[in-house]
Length: 172
Image (cartoon, rainbow, N blue to C red; front, side):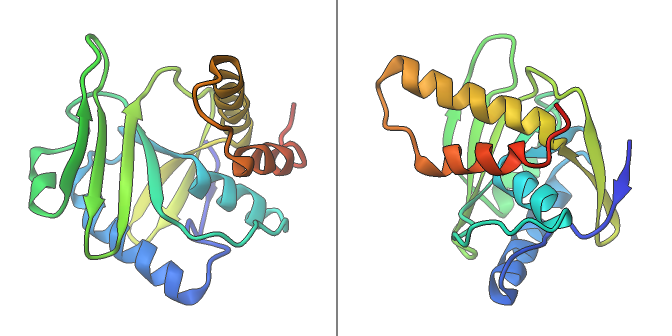
């Protein structure tokens, strides 16, 4: 596992402070090492760390995958509202946590499929795992494919943009 620094990169200062406030509030409610940061924050980290500019867009949510249902402590309800809770038998439930103060949410997903590679990234006194760009690219393309095949929802153009940018640095 590679260890890199500076998780929150490529944001305006005000946005960076808001994300830090959100993480500082969320991390005490998680078992460190039992979750992986995925999605937009992971993509932005990998691209920015390699000198590729990430499109300017607001940061609205943090995506996490949890290894077990015990990764997220019950104390989370002290600081977050649970806006959605969806149980799938035999899996970690999907949970949407909302922080009304920072106007952000965390989407918590099942750790399946597990990423093949994670990168440990420094954040304050923590080493947090983020998904590799290769695993994130695979998931992004799979998400796009699911949306296109089901034809129930429109495909968000940012997913295509994220895939194209990720392909510039993924070792595939």
